[in-house]
Image 1 (cartoon, rainbow, N blue to C red):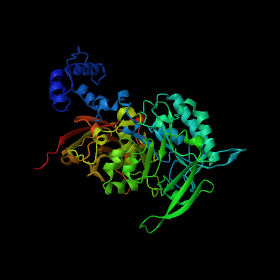
Image 2 (cartoon, rainbow, N blue to C red; image 1 turned 90 degrees about the horizontal axis):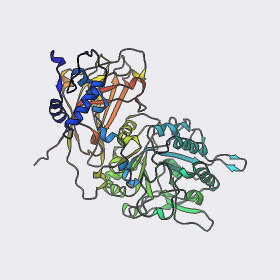
Image 3 (tube, helix red, strand yellow; image 1 turned 90 degrees about the vertical axis):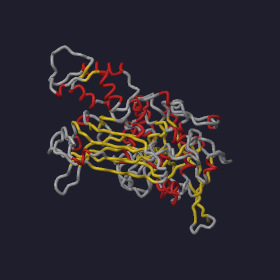
Image 4 (cartoon, rainbow, N blue to C red; image 1 turned 180 degrees about the vertical axis):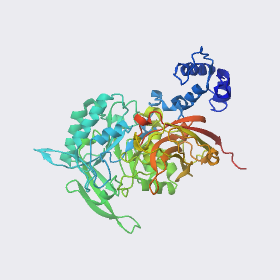
Length: 564
């Protein structure tokens, strides 16, 4: 028998490959027997008509296994949905979250669209944002609208968005909770209409918390399954005029510029001077409709200090811009924030300067245990692709249980030992042309290998390497001396670190290299050995030309020994 047609027996395959090379010592001979049976049931090229011996596989069958999703670098056990993980407090999960969900493009003049909510939902998003303002009147009935206030973006009706969510829940009744993050700029009559629309459209699909439910731990995703949950304002005191009053002082807002804008009839601003400060601060008094407040679970409030915040009821939460996140971590406040996030919720969002709707690196916020790390879903850049990889875990249900190292962190916790990750790119298969086009020049693919990590709990890091490009787009093999070398990375925060693989094609003379496909894998979900990497398009799908697109890589993980 020719060398390349050698047959591999079950026991040899288990001991020499699965256990020794792949590091899967939990796999038993019975599982290998089932695998061989499935491989023999596949149609193979040049398959002989001789009687089959299902105790062994040949080269073609072994190659089919290497490229299969069963051998994916993303641990298939962690990728599968596990209902047993869904009974913890919702504060113990990372939640797939979007920022200004309604926008189709930039933050200043793009269109607003109800369709963007459906796009985000089908991408796995479970926390959606609505910036709600006073609109026109339909006769005597106010019409709340959603848009990016004080910009040239278009407006859509609040009611249309709620109807869109109802349609989604009708088709997907087992969806884990949809959290609506309200940036509420409306006057009282418009807020009352918002409450009416929520109740009339959603009915029993709207979670209405009781006063008793606001004490103790937050409900679990399983408790809230199939329901819509509101994040907004739920102040404690009811004024004599029958409206809630809330007094804010220099509170952060999703629209950072809106803090300086007074909305006639809904906000009153007064100047105050902080002790030792050189500038005046704005204090804003808002009136909140009790009808809307009573439908709200998560109450967004100002951070004064972490010791006070952690003693607040668990439905109180904070929101921070990406710049505030970085400042707090530089000021060594990440540990206190992580402790707060074990029982309470936090949300982060892009800086107001990102008018082009680019995204910030979500790694730092994730490392503090922040649950709602909101990104611009209309921009498929590297941070959004990292987000896709993060929430691929647990069946892409939008809720991923935070690692125990984050949930158990306190002010005296020791950092985990660093890990060395080695990656070698071996080959590619069925790589698509740019944008999945069916025709065009032959691509010249290369792979960009990046590891995103957190250094000393205060700083995001990204280390990247590129392979050489190949002239074979269908089945490239990286075989030169440089590409045979392993690309090595030191992982400091294994609980949140991400491996990101992007495939590009070399651009023509004077043109930019073009993106082809990608895959993001949490290091905590990465399997060792010779693994297939399933590639996704910019929209995080594997349809059409991306059905069989993959890479074959070799990975090794080894704990770095501390120097004595």
